[in-house]
Length: 138
Length: 184
Image (cartoon, rainbow over the protein chains, first blue to last red):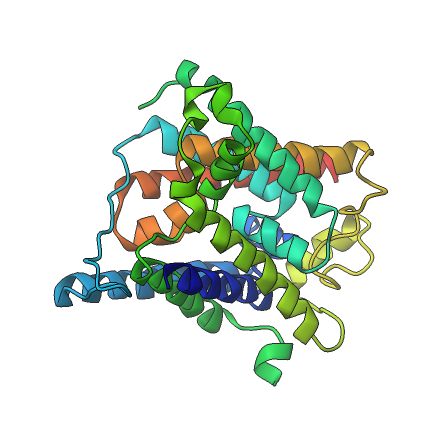
């Protein structure tokens, strides 16, 4: 059951990324030039409605699909990691025009050259894993 | 059918992203994509080389189910699409791209330089291989990407996620305003 819901959520996510043009390099370029409200509207409305959903889930003590209690883990209280890691990701995001979700969706849309982008991202992930113990973890 | 064949405005796309997050939470998981890359490294045996990947990938198999869906979602979108993709970019964005020699900015989701032929040019290699590497490395160091930090984290008022989003923008602004003018 869990995997069915996750698969459905994934398919829906891929459709949203395509239909709202979030996977488009052009939209990301436009966003970083502050020339359109589109991406700010997408992310902003997702956050506001997401906040409402989490509020309602907590307030009502809603249970998950298998009757399990819903636990939303807080993010670890780091400062350097999100800022510096975020900056490094931001450079890559503006180059490829794709954050991780769109990389997969772009491949699904038939732009197979993005398999190379995915391979490079996996290499980046692997490289991070190899050097993680040498980087500031705070 | 217009809903499935055309493109969606922000006020449809944003709430739909919240719905995806909601489904992930109800399923007993969380909304995030970049951790799937960690799972793939572990699945590929990277745990033999460093403890970082030394976990049982099966515990994270939800992330693989999710990304298979994310890929299928792209495939279905393409199958349902009728006619050409025409992104309604702002006039200012279009003008700046035309000035750089782009012929039809917004026709198709990606500019022409994302092709196999351009992979071994300076620009293509930098943007596809270099950019991809930074996405993988940066999201792991940050502990999340636009979905995990940007949407799920901000929705839950997580301070590290706010710092991450600030980082995303510093990086994106540097690249767009200080690098792209010289390489595109």
